[in-house]
Length: 225
Image 1 (cartoon, rainbow, N blue to C red):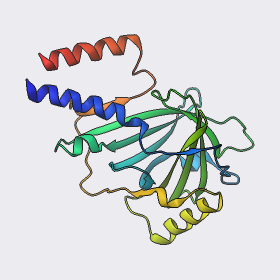
Image 2 (tube, rainbow, N blue to C red):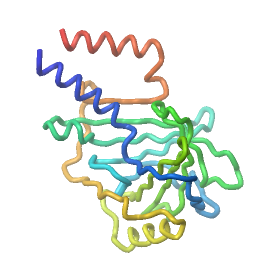
Image 3 (cartoon, rainbow, N blue to C red):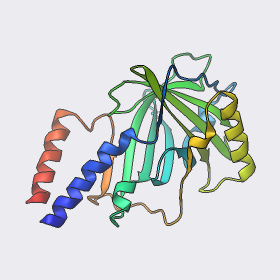
Image 4 (cartoon, rainbow, N blue to C red):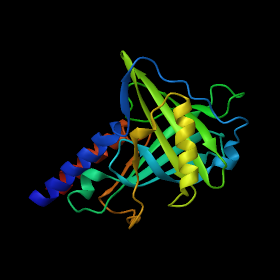
């Protein structure tokens, strides 16, 4: 039973860890300009995260998805979580956020809302991309007397040529955002667990509905028992 309890505890740590991958600063968010004439239809699909602010997790991917029924947008972030990696457990963690475009004249400037974000929506800006090789996103959220910020360098493949990385880091620096906060993401030995695995953790807008919370509590009770 102790082994099962430790797995449940690790999953709780995994969920609690979603506030990471940001850096915190005093003052207002730096203004980062979106790509001119940004085309979301070309940006949709799978991106591999090559570098990201302040994280030790591996196997990060972003999937940008448009709902065909109502044209809404979402981002699904998937990764291996460091809290479970360190105790030798294969794991996969998915975190889904809703995207909206407040100004249709600036489609590269969006707002994102993740289920566990107590501070509400954050700015979400695509500030560099050629759609086929590289992309880059920046997010920032005001909190109390300061803000928290994050950025990601993306690639259509698990690797990205260094000139593209240098170009993105330099562009971010021109907006007053320090590129030294980037961590390198490891994509070796990445795998997808079976959908039935206990170590698949998915957090989406429906995760914390009353029905889901009750079901999770029941599942945890069965596991501990």
